[in-house]
Image (tube, rainbow, N blue to C red):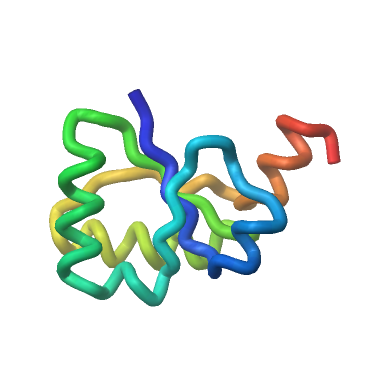
Length: 88
């Protein structure tokens, strides 16, 4: 089981997103309620973070790691995902 959190803004998410991913913008990752939510939903699952290019998701991952949340940054972000999965 995996959880994918997209840390982009809602307008970016509405253009392209990974199916079943959750939108939690990077600016919200500093909110302790959001961090608790992420801890809860990712418990016992593999957590992946994505953004447009991989930079914001890496920042989010570093922040989450400060609170004991482990995960993986999707390098290259949604751009790489689209290229790999959809051939765009």
